[in-house]
Image (cartoon, rainbow over all chains, first blue to last red; front, side, top):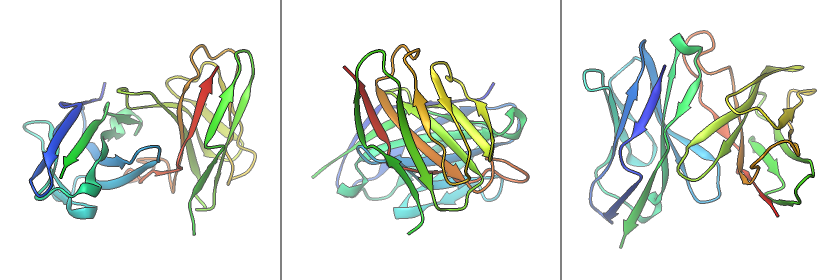
Amino acid sequence: AQSVTQLDSHVSVSEGTPVLLRCNYSSSYSPSLFWYVQHPNKGLQLLLKYTSAATLVKGINGFEAEFKKSETSFHLTKPSAHMSDAAEYFCVVSDRGYGNKLVFGAGTILRVKS
Amino acid sequence: DGGITQSPKYLFRKEGQNVTLSCEQNLNHDAMYWYRQDPGQGLRLIYYSQIVNDFQKGDIAEGYSVSREKKESFPLTVTSAQKNPTAFYLCASSMQPPGGVSQPGELFFGEGSRLTVL
């Protein structure tokens, strides 16, 4: 079965410092991976996706993620945090071998301190 | 602007009552989904529909029902059989079922409906 583990439930950074949100996945086939962001009491918005093309994926708002098959990881990074980045972030895996079902991680809440 | 509209945003229900959450999209998407979100648990799939007049159970369908009579609309009914209905409910749509023919599609989400059982 496929699964997603977000290694940190909460991450706190200072404005202007780098952001790292960690995600490990488990899948027996060739996964597609996504990062979504959710601001309080709002729906989710796609940040970026990996679908077997370039392993370094660039997304919106300066975020990027690198697919590392050997480490089964898809960590989300941003060089410099902004106050508006404070939100909850979800790592998601989808795999054709499992009927393309989307499996969501439990989420990581990012806090940005001024 | 195109998007997904969920209503109501907040809803209170007494135990034993059924409630219906509305989801409308004008994106001309074929597939629609209902997710339940609880703190620290991510999103769990309740029901999904890939085409009008057809829908499938997700991982936690017990106590819920849906209909898909029109492409634009996918209402969710939370029945009295749902043991713990207090949650944040999110509706989503996609142009094709994720992974349909070639690659997974992006999900577009509404802003959610927060249901509280009193």
